[in-house]
Length: 252
Ligand code: PEP
Image 1 (cartoon, rainbow, N blue to C red):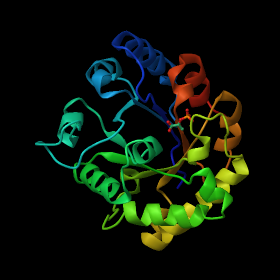
Image 2 (image 1 turned 60 degrees about the horizontal axis):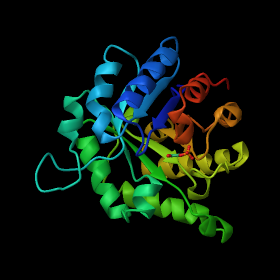
Image 3 (image 1 turned 30 degrees about the horizontal axis):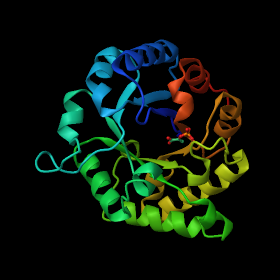
Image 4 (image 1 turned 45 degrees about the vertical axis):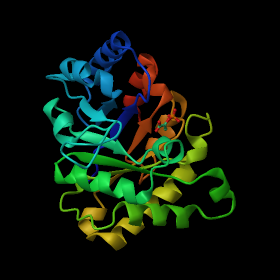
């Protein structure tokens, strides 16, 4: 069965409410005629409620940029799965490299986020990726295997649509340096094989693996043309309505 491509926009810590409204409206319009792919946006927490209104009755999926495992309580700075679901959100980015490297989130913590999202029927987009130093010392696959096994420890996947992975080499995020389509495919195939060792083959073959790291209109088609690249997680280019429109209209 072919995997439905997913193009996901991560707005990071950007957008006033007015900008969020404009960008969400443009995304809804741009995605309206696309039936063979999914489009998702992850605004900052402050704009989630407003963007939820704009996405109402559209095909665009609402996501959070992070999610806690607990339902409520003493977790300053966090939002819970029920809070996101109340707004109509169905996905959450977890383990983004900025969470790992700027805020020190560990694989063990990210594992709790993945579990909490899935227990609440939210789809986590689990981000993994190696640093430049790890790549240059030939440790890319070892690092990815460690991250994936640890972040998915004790996780059971019964529905492949319930989990998304994103391969985001740290050296490619926000730097303008993109993995070549061949480099992306090589790593995505490695991740697919690892998932096959961890889960049932039918499940592993259907889990979507996105590529992220300086995806722009000029490179999206070649990346999406790779067999195991099932979508893109887009940062900077998701903040420009025209760039994101071109990206979601990729031709592979
Ligand atoms: C990201 O935020 O996940 C990302 C890949 O950013 P950018 O597209 O700007 O590199």
